[in-house]
Each structure stands twice: as C-alpha cells, then as structure tokens.
Amino acid sequence: MTNPSPNRPRPDDLARRYIRLAHALEAHQPDFIDGYGGPADLADRTLRPASELLSEAQALHNDVQSEPDPTRRTFLDRQVRAMHTLTRMLTGETLPYAEEVRGLYDIEPERADLAELDTALRELDTALPGRGSLEEREAAVRSKVTVPPSELMRVSGAILTELRRRTASRYDLPDGENFSFELATNKPWGGYSRPLGNLQSYIAINTDLPVTLTGLPDLLAHEGYPGHHAEHAMKEARLVWELGWFEHNIQLINAPEGVITEGIAMNALDAVMTPGEVTDWLTGDLAKVAGIDPDAVREALRLAQLKEPFKGVSGHAAMMLHADGAPAKEVLDFFRHYNAATPERAQKSLEFISQPTFRGYIFTYSVGRRLVREAIERGAVTFGQLLTEALTPGALRP
Image 1 (tube, rainbow, N blue to C red):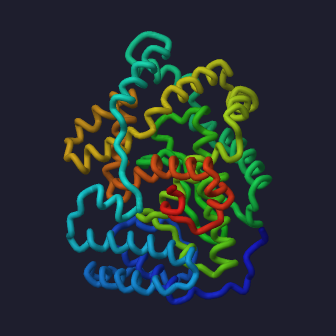
Image 2: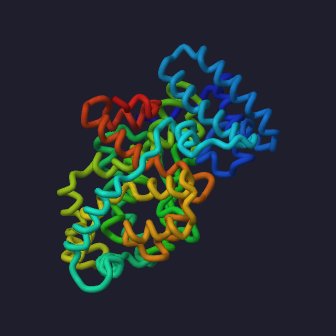
Image 3: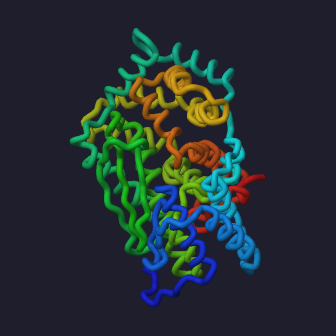
C-alpha cells in the first residue's frame, strides 16, 4: 500500500455532518472521540444543547439511508444509531444498562457463568504451586517475570520491531505509518493506542501496576501490530484516501466500531504468531533481552493458561455494578475472589468499569474477541479484511 495522494478529496455532506456531530457530543462527554485526523474546521467542540444534538442525530440517521454503497450505509447506520443513543442519555433519559450497551455497541452484554468460574478457580488453586493464598501465589509467579519500568522501553522496542516485521510480511501496511511510544501513570487502562491521523498513532503502557514479560507480546500486538495502530493506519489509507469515506478519519469509543477494533486487537497476536512461536520467543530471545529466567517464564505462561476462563469477569462485574446496583465493595470483592486480584488490581478494574466512557465499553473486549474469532474460524471473514474494511458487529454474527 502506498502513501495517500497529496491531492486529497474533501469530505462529502454525510461525513461532514457525522464528524461535526461527533465533536459536538465530545463537548458533552470528553473522550467520546478516540482520535481524529481530519480537517480542523470540522472539529468544533462548541457546547450546544443536547436536545439540538438529538434532532441532528435523528436527521443524520434518516439521511444515511440514502447512501448508495451498502457497506458504507450499514456502517454509518450503526454508528449514528449509537450517537442517537448517547444524545438520548445526554438529554436526561435513563436507559436500562443492557439497552445502553445494545444501543451504543450493537451487541448484547454477557454475564459470566459463575459455576464455570468456580470450577476454574478450584483448578487454578490446585495447579498453582507454593504456600499462602491464591492471590499471594499468583503475585509470586508474576514477580519473577516483571519487567522493571526502567527496562520497559528497551524490551518493548524489541517486541514491537518483531511484531511490525511479521505484520508487514502478512498484511499491506501503508508506507509512512509510524507511532510514538511512551510509559504512562495514573491511568485506568493497562495500554492505550490513540490514532493521530496521517497514519500515525500514540501508544502508551501504564506502569501503575507491574508489567510482566509474558504479557507484553499480547499487549503490544493489541495496541500496535497488527492491532489498533495497524488497523487505524490501514483503514485510513484505504477507506479515507482511496474510497473517500472521511468518516473513518474519526474514531469513536462509544460506538459499534469499538467492538470491531477491540475484537481485532484481542486476536492480534494470534494473527501473526502461533502459541508455540510465542512460547519459544518468550523463553528464548525475549527472556535473554529482559534478563529473566526461562523457567520463570514457563511458569508464568502456565498461570496465564489457567487464567483464560476468567476473561469475562470484568463484564460480569459491570453488570453487577450498573444493572444490579451492587455496591462498589461487593464488586471489589468479586474482582478479588475470581481474579485473585491484589487490592490495587481490583481497584484498577473497578475504576475502569466505573468511568462513563468505559462502563459499557468493557464488553467490546470479551464480545468483540469472541465475534472476531468465531467469524474467522467459520470462514466468514479474514483478519486482513477486518483490518481494511468498514465492518460492523452484525457482519460478524452467524
């Protein structure tokens, strides 16, 4: 894929109205926009009455139905539905939590099976060596593979270089794509990738909690290659500069595209490496780079495998908090019990699902991960299509 043409077209009426409405919503709900790389004159964050935005969203949704391209029409239809849902909430309408998730993300929120979690917890307790509580034994395993903050940039650089090489060999990365990378603190997330436009991204890792070597390849594939950064750069090059669909110059967090982008990112490492290759890499070259005992890496990888059944814990906790009205302490205890989490980790998890921007977004990870994986497995879509096409959650459902 080559660099975008310098003779760039201007957005059409639908894209202009879509981008303007998104920025108007951002004035009411900061962080509604994940990234924007389009014309500055459309980025008007003047605070306007929510009732005015509600009418604007409805009119835009009606006009989207006249878009002749069915792929573009479906994408805009689902995205503008989410914007309409948000404007309803901003006008003071109270939606049941499940309806909020459905309206914003075009998916159903899912609870975990507590009986399955209890079984997995017993298996984890039996398999994990050492003495003390499950929390203490997990922390002991992780401590052996923790990368000090002073070494994170160096070790992450080696990982990103290899992930970028593998991604470029499988998928058509656009010329000139790049990213800046830094460490962050005092954030509710573990990692973040913000698209900046012009094929660039800002990637950060949060060091509030210990970062393990065994988690870094997945984290950096998620945020970088072939995850968020690669997806945003490839979609900008194809959808914006080749097709002229300027709505893809802006990325919205509280919208169905979040399900797609997180589904891609949650499956990103598997798209460029087999589990065996990841294990060999971690116990070989990466263990040497980080100065960590390969046997400690193997032990941490076994722990990660045992923790796989707990992927839905955060979504279930969000349902407890927002649908059931459970007190924060009960949700913290739930995190500590099923994630064997330290008080600090449990508090971070609660902080994430409590924020207005992320209270429903939490399901984009678990549901997005499953939708993408199942769609790929049954041959409905390829990972390359996910990186370059304007897909919606509905397109991935059977």
